[in-house]
Image 1 (tube, helix red, strand yellow):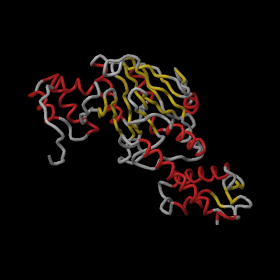
Image 2 (cartoon, rainbow, N blue to C red):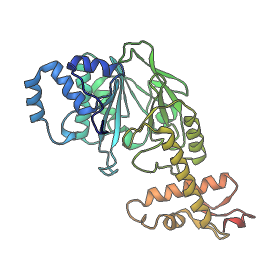
Image 3 (spheres, rainbow, N blue to C red):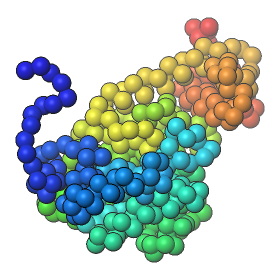
Image 4 (tube, one colour):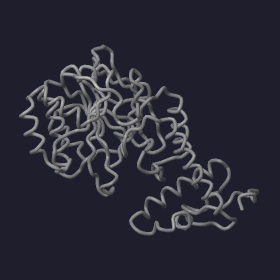
Length: 348
């Protein structure tokens, strides 16, 4: 038999196919999943009419992307990030679920997210809490509107609450569990374990689903861009320690906040560390006995970074230079200038 898209052919009722999907026995791509669900609930004619009338733009469709049982993603634009780098909002859970990172600031994207949550609540599911991975603006834009709308508690790391100047209803520490009740296959005791992973942000958390080998990775890594670690606020020594820790976790799927999921999590983690360390070496090679401002070093590494990206490349480079200081390979001179550490002639 010739290889192609068709692996095998069988007849399934929508209900039976969805039951197999919930048990993790049958992968179904998101558009087909929505169609099968509509077939089962409303019948063929109503489903066809709904497909014909569905908005062509995802942002106006009120839909989420259901990739795995118990995991929905709502990708939304979060300016000033460009439209091709959306932020993923996660709805995780089955009959009881959490909203992880209420990202959008603009009303259009907020309404899209809220309609996806409303749909879950209308079908009888319970929203337990709004959960924060960290405090950055592209992850908390709809925080207060979401809390006001749903009257649910806010959970996150203590440092995240301090940086947002907001009281958290539950402070999550390393190893704490978010109890979700039963998983889609009917087994009880499903939970997410919080892992404290500072580096990108001071209070950064990721959430590990040990049952299914899934990691909600937030801004630890990205499948779209090289993940930003900038100073002030970020620390590369802590970031590398967090990456090493997550590399030791049993993972089959990784869900980043920016980009599509990957089923090769260890490869992504490894390549991200390699890239970041290569950038550090670029900064090291540019140091001399004469002090240089962090921005001057940044513009030599990123020649096109003098426009809108200037704050990002400057902070990224500063974090690399501070890492070299911590490693004893550089010295800080004054508030924001750096030079090669005495005796480090081999960096030339």
